[in-house]
Image 1 (cartoon, rainbow, N blue to C red):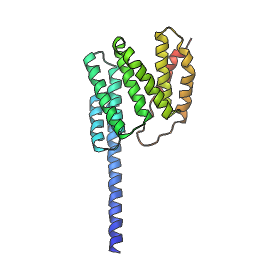
Image 2 (cartoon, one colour):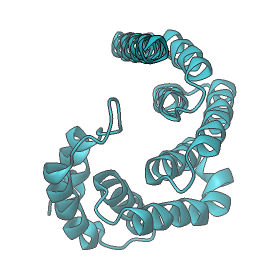
Image 3 (tube, rainbow, N blue to C red):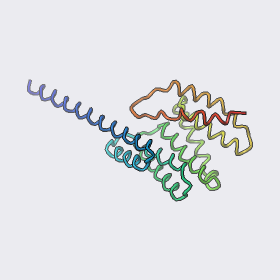
Image 4 (cartoon, rainbow, N blue to C red):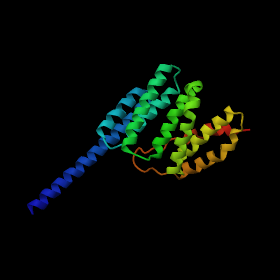
Length: 210
């Protein structure tokens, strides 16, 4: 009887510790997103990194730390800052990949990272990274054919290529429409699982106007 009671106490304590850990994780992640929203990206990144080191099997904090770095580069023209942020973002994504292999969301983020390189310095990176961007989107869509971010951002990437070569970007508008449907059907798998991108549809749709 004592053994059973001891086991129940142990299980109860373990459950409480798990709940507390989840609560701490969720509070930390929420705070990191608040810092990002408040336009203090480096504070957000630092908190995501601290969470990642505590949550040793969770790829999401590394993923978001990378995303903050990547998105921040679009608001700066300082080449040294851009290179530094994108290099660090790749390191975070590499960490995420060790924790979650064959992950479409990580592949999409890596495609966006390489897109950031191309956007920042097309004369240097367009030739070397365009094929990689295409490959990453294709892999992501093979893993998750109905992923709205893969569909939307791949369409935008191809639209940019069409414009560059003097072709009609509207050829990829049906893919944007598919992305809209995928966004509408998307469900959250776990807390903080990626669900961003829907607010960018209208921006991408600008390419579909006559």
